[in-house]
Structures are given as structure tokens and as C-alpha cells.
Amino acid sequence: MTANPSWKDPFGSNRLGLWLADRRDRKAKQIGRVAARWGWLKPMGERGKVVWIIAGAERENVRLAVELLRAIRARRLDIRLVLTFEHDYPDMLALLDDCDKTGWGYAPCDHPKAVARVMARFEPFGVILVGARPRPNLLAALKGHAHMLAVNLAEAADFDCERIYAADESLAAQRNQAPVVDMRAILTQAQVDPNFKSLVNGPHARHLWWLHQAASESTTCNVWRTAFADDVLFVSGARPAGAVQPISSWNREPPAAGSVIWVDDDKWLPAIAAAVTATHLEQFSPSLLWQAMAGGAAVSRALAVVLPKAQLDEALPVVEDVIATWLQYRDNPIAARKHGDTARRLFWQERRLAEQVSAELVERVFEW
Image (cartoon, rainbow, N blue to C red):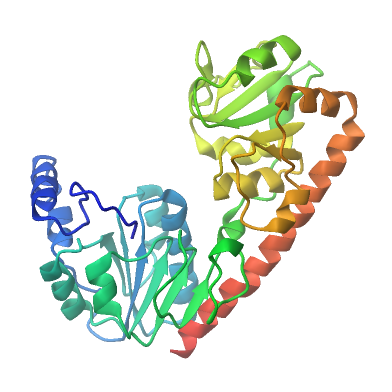
């Protein structure tokens, strides 16, 4: 769960904040969320040990939690699995429909009564934290738990775990540490239909570019229009200022030269990553990082983007003048391909390690 000291936290322990959250949910007819907030949860099935997977609010962590649950279910048919989360993503959770003895829903809040209730109702044999540490009262209730795994925490695990699976070298623990790897690399779509570039370009011979920007006020788009008047720029992250074409309403016709297309639907990112000449990341996003590297194009980053592993510096150099770098790539495609090949090689290295480590995690649960 994502730590949030604010009294407004709908999953915290402040009574006023929880009352306000309950009121909002009742008005929205989300009665099930109110019940879950206060620990009125029950595992599916009548028999079997309960393994509780706790995910935070971020989409990529819920997705990873879903995939881990599916992998565990494939190996263990006898246990009862429960997934709780702080934000609902129906498209991902639909993948659990065929999982027997598996329940999922909103997480309980951290009020002592809710924590005590859910612990009594679950009696979890094992706990797997995905993406964020528990809040204080739940963490206290889990203290000394024999089977607790921490996966991709956003901060160093300063509590006892059977095994810690860190995605960032700076968060590696002193003990019980698995090899540092980001399991989200497994979820990256690495094999993409190459027709997207032809669909965008039509009869035109031009370059495509991808910018993941941190703020709408970024000047890169305006400068890009001047330097690459014949090309097409895809922008993810913050919506660019001015007139742009959202990709969600794109009619599949080749856009005009100099078009800036805002990627407001992430499903297009794998195809974009494989079609562009180069990508630049102004802010860090694990899922976008691996997708950009898997695409095989040259990838660069802003100084503010801190990579989870030092070895990735080779594939994602810090670039201050994006336009100048992209002009070099346009005029020297061999250099661009060389940088892209390095990024793709390191992506596959991370992915193979992620597959090994995730298999070890599933095997560990199998042995419980």
C-alpha cells in the first residue's frame, strides 16, 4: 500500500478522513468499497491456506500483482488467493476471472479495527507486498509473519521479510535479497507488428519521434516543429500545449507533416516504440522505460531521470539538447541504430533475469 500521511487518505487511519471517504463512496453507490475499507472481506472457498497479495494504487503494480497471482495459481491449486488494491483497473482484473478460489477487491484501511478484522477473517499464511509498503497498523499486525515477500517496493524494506525482490539497486537490502531486477520487464510487449510505421507514414518517407514529457509547458515540441517540419512527433505524459491530435481519436489516416500526436491511450506505446527513430524520457516511468528499450530505437533521458541500475546508463545517455541529438540521429542512422541495439540488448538481459527471479518467487510460494 502506498504510504500517505494525509488525513484525507481513504486507506489511512484518521477517522475524519475515513468518514469522508465513506460518505463519498456511499454517494457513488460504492457500498462494497466501504465494507472493504473496514475489513469486511472474506477469502473465496472454504478450505486451504490463504495467501494475501497486497498491491498499491499504481496501475503497473496492480498489473504485476495480477500476473504474479496467475503464476502462483498455475502452480498451487490448493491455496486460497486474495488480491487487494487501492485503485480498480477492470481490464486487468478481468484476467482473474478463470482463477478458482481467488478473490479480489479494495483494500482495508489502516484503522486498528479494520486491520484486526481483516487479519482475523483472512488468517493469512503468506503475504506478498507488491509496489508499496503497508501502512503502520497493518505493518505492526504483520510483524514476525513467517512468510512475507516484498516485491518492487518504492522504498527500502526496513522490516523483516522472508525475501525481498527489489527493482532498484538503491533499494537493495542487506539480507534476504533476491537479485535486483524489475519484474515489470516481463510484462513489456516486445514483439510488435511492424505495420504501424507504414500506417502513419503512408506514401511519405519521414521519421517518427517519441517524447515522454513531464509538463505541458515543455518547449521541446515547439522547437521540434521548426527542426522537423516533415516528421511526426508522438508525445506521452503531460498533454502538449496548443493544438494536438489525441491518438484515441486518430482516424488511421497518415497525419500531416509536422503533426504532434498526444498519446492519451497507452495501448499504442509498443507500436510507437518500435516505429520511431528515437525516444526521449523527461520523467521516469518503469513501464515506459522497458517499452522504449524493447522497441529497438535510440533512447535518451533528462538529467532528472534516475535509472534503477547503473548499467542502464550505457543505453540511456543524459541529453540536454534533445533536438540537436535527434538531428544527429536523423543524419546518422547507423549511430541511431547502434544506440537502439544497446537498449534492446539490455532490455532482454533484464527480462531474462526477471523471468528467473519471478520463477524463484513462485517456487518459493509453492514450497510454503
